[in-house]
View: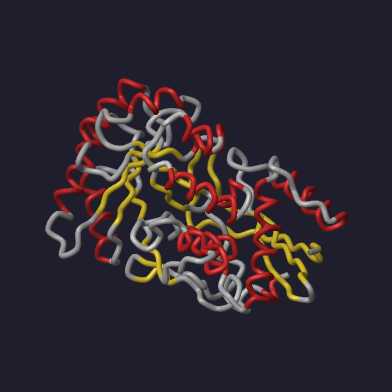
Length: 345
């Protein structure tokens, strides 16, 4: 295997995304092409500082991979994601199988995966309106952003949404994502109040507080961890018994295979794996869909993969993994999506 070409890209977000590190207005990265016995494969590195290495460090790692054939190390997960994804795309194309089929090994991957819609922080009325609109679009799992206002306000918002979607023909599952906003007292209050209303509460405490998260289990609603996985690693989080679910980002974990291995380890420990993106372009987003399809419970559990509409543009004109009626059909063509990406690099 050799990295034969790199191509920089940048895509604007449809609207700025506020994070602890500031607003994100665009996503920048690199597309990578490898050659495996004459068969090309394409991968994507879209670093997100705080989750991965910087864009500059990612570029340097990929240049070294191109010039010397060195696989990027664990301190460059986005670069490693790109190279290992490109290799997997090429190998799957040589085998005339989809990436999901090669990831699933002897099991059959899911033909489609459900995805959640994200409902941002707003008033009770606006939150309910956004939730109803998502349900009308076919989503059956909604993730509500919480933690910006008071716990009482967030509980009122979730309760109002639960009431609003209670009479739908198909049950709607709710999730809440606090992004580490609460202290221990607030988290205990929120989890107790949300018990029975949500599937889980994502990252109730700061990423560093593994012991605090472990102590929250059993207080009320189940606990999911996201940011903590980057700080400690999936193995340490599982060993600490700190959560009931893990939210896995292949870009931040160093590639599809590593994300799938983490999900399988979680499932073996009785912890629910959920796959999501770091607001990636189409190549990495398609790869994450393949990972979700190969993940234990992939066909029945909603993943956070419907992120393409957060981008104002993309690296291809036609999205190979659009959301339709709350689900994404997994591409069955060889590799990631047949020839959709081959000419990009």
